[in-house]
Image: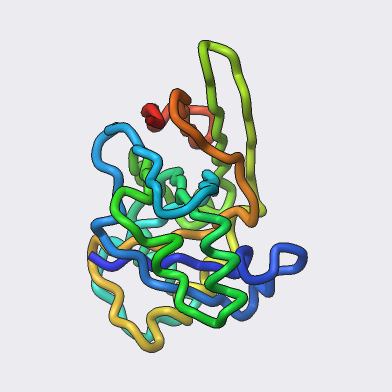
Length: 201
């Protein structure tokens, strides 16, 4: 399984260029398994919860034409990428790879995958809420702005990479997100339905 993260919003949050997708690879080891807690690491001082939409590929494809992309999308799920934001800024300023800040163990929380068509994926709404001591400390809802041009993006990735069954593409990683710290309960939803809940410790 390969995880492709579209990072246009992280490069230019003011005006991401949807016609020119930019992506990086995230290790499968970054997936936070089955509702387990996210333990805030100590290698950076600031971590943010960045929402995204995870789209899963359902069959092998290479050089996919944009008009056929819908045939390759199997399902979608809401996602959170825990970004070490201060470290990311430092890496970017020094022209270094971003891996340390976005692809460490258990950095990616995935909700429940649901079978959706291409059109349904493009209209998905992801919402994130954080609670501390039963009080809501953050709530965010993101709809169509989640997705870049799905057809062009999948076609661009498949031009140079064979997409395989089970591969995941993270669309619309938010440019900013709430800072996280221990003793928070996280709720992740897609289209208003609960998809994943876990603790931050």
